[in-house]
Image (cartoon, rainbow, N blue to C red):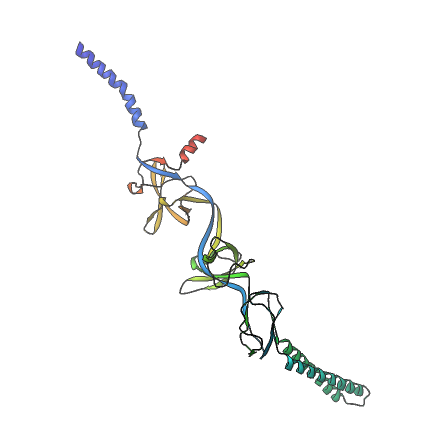
Length: 353
C-alpha cells in the first residue's frame, strides 16, 4: 500500500502544478522584444533652403548728359541723400548765355507778332504775315525751353533717395557726356535673387515669406517676401529664377553679399513626425515597421522634410501609430513582437487611464 500512496500523492501534486504552468505560459512574451514609440504630431513649417545673392533695390551710376567742367561737388561720400538733392554742379556760363539769347529772341518775336496781328485786324497787313510772325514766335519759345533744359542738366541731382558712393571726379575736372561720376544705391530695401528646383515651381507664388541669413552677419535673420517669379525654367539647370524683397532699415545688408534663403511653402498644424532611425530605405522607397496587435506590419511612407532627429511623414502613418525604432534587421512582416515603449508614451497612457 505504501507505493500506491506515493503514486497518488505524486499525481495530486502534478495536478496542482498544471494551472500554475499554464498561467506562466500566458504571461510569457509572445514574440521578440522590439523598441517602439508612438508617432507624434506637431506644427511644422514646410520650407526649402536655397542660396542667393543680394542686390540693391535700385542702383545707378550717375553720368552727365552734357560735357563741362565740374565747379562744385555738393555731397559727402558715403552719405545719405534725398530725392532731387543737388550732387554735382557743372559750369553753366555758356548755357546761361544761350538762355539769355533765347529769351531776347522770344521778346523780339512777341513784338513782331503783336504788330502783325494788329495790322491784320485793321486789314492793313496780310494774314500770311501774321501767321509767319506767330510761327517764328513759337520757334523762339521752343528754343528758350531747350536752352532752359540744357542749363538745368548742368546740375546733377539724385533720382531717388539712397546712399551715395565714392566719387570718381574732383572739382575742376572736365567730364564728357556719359562719363562715370558717382554711384547712387537705394539699399533701404534689398533684393535677393535665387534659383529654386523646378519640382517646387507649382508651389511658388508672389507674397510667400522668406527668411534670409548671411555668414557676414552671423546670428541675425531677416524676413522678406517673394515679389517676382520668372515665367520660364532654365532648360539646363531645371531651376526657376525668383526674386524677393527684404526690408533693410538699419542698412546692415549690403549688395553682393552671399545669402542662405529659406522659403516658407506651407504651414502644417498637425504634421506626423517619427524618429529618423525608424525609416527603412529600400529600392528608392521608404518604409517603417508598424506594430498592429503585437505583430509587425511593413508600411510604405512618403517622407517630407527633416527637423533635427525627426522626419516628417507626409503620408502612410497617422498620429499615435506604434512604430519600431531599433532592431529592424531581426524583424519581418507578420512576425509577433513584444513592444517596449522607449518614449514613455505607454506608461503615460496607463497612468491617465
